[in-house]
Image (cartoon, rainbow, N blue to C red):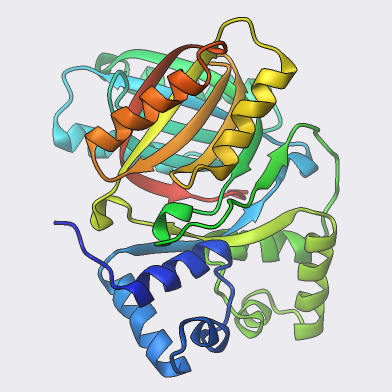
Length: 322
């Protein structure tokens, strides 16, 4: 059953998506409520499973890592067996994102890696163990990502902002303190500096310095929030777009369109499955169809075809599962 949000809760969610480390006081000033009132509202949103997680946006490419995704199609799978497969994959190393999906594929899994041998090992672990239940699979490697600001949550969307990750692999080395800070913030971005200090047994000044260094190195790009979109009555789609007669100018126009469309929340360029991907959030199948029609109409000289699947449930978001 979907939940209808009032204007204040919508604004709070929007602000937490932009920066989940904002204090209750800072958020209160933006929604004109007391610190305690904001704290209670956010607690209610968490208890209703509308807010699922707070996480740091980390450019892992700076440390020489990249993403790769496996999409799986099941066969002869019961609900219990599907849960078993998901739980097994969640226990594998370096899982960034996993989601149940509907369409041509049933499960999407994103891993982090520096090593193609590690990629092969993870694929084999899954397919060997569950060979009888996997009908088909596909594989792709991501090169760049752009995350937008969930403008659809606002009643009057502003021009979309972009957080860009990828393109060039770096070799930045982190201190142990920086690694520990990243590990904590990737799972819960609202963890206070004092709490981090206690957990890793370092001084508050050391934690502040580590966080500042990570920001200056452009490893931490921001802090965001995972929202249960289905709980709010939204449908979350992933689109895979293939081009015809592409040019740099045409592709840049499409990317600019993604950036200002309040319903598009993510863009990925990858090697393997499609020329470009994006994630689209809408209220109905009619709105979904209208967005597809508009894309094809606006970019009929670039888009050859669009494949899509519906994201039913996101199980994990962790940009630093190390």
